[in-house]
Length: 189
Image 1 (cartoon, helix red, strand yellow):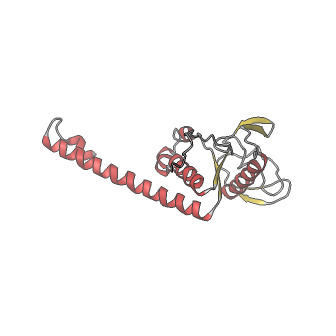
Image 2 (cartoon, helix red, strand yellow):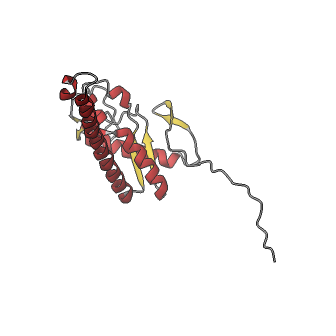
Image 3 (cartoon, one colour):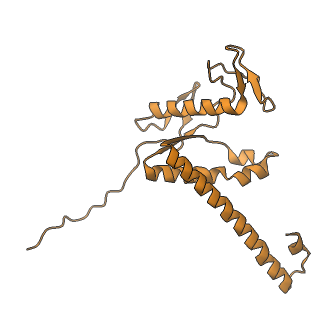
């Protein structure tokens, strides 16, 4: 792209550089998409139910982690998982982004409101268990996903979580299927 910016506008060399940059971007996009397809296939083959946290990707992209967030392709991975699990008879459960997964003790359920993002390890004041922030959040997200799955079997779209009404995304068990009405086929002799 630096070489492209140095080319004179309208020149043949600029047109060649534009094509070269486009090829590099296409290769990167294809490589990323291939990785996400392989990862989602592996997750679908190994699991019938996948629980994921519904993160605010646009909000995270406005932080200093923007480049890493966009490169990871979280949204694309969730889309791949959703359709592949549905095709295989599995289920993708999304936990609401406001669920306090990192602040809850996975052992006793104590909510530690004093945690900031800079604290990566903490000890529960109630049960004295030492937690790694990410591992603790993973355990809590899994438990919340299983709870959502067990309480939301009648196709509800809302339920009470931590005292507030939360809408579920992609967890409705009933899907509308169009019924094609055709005239009955009669056997002619």
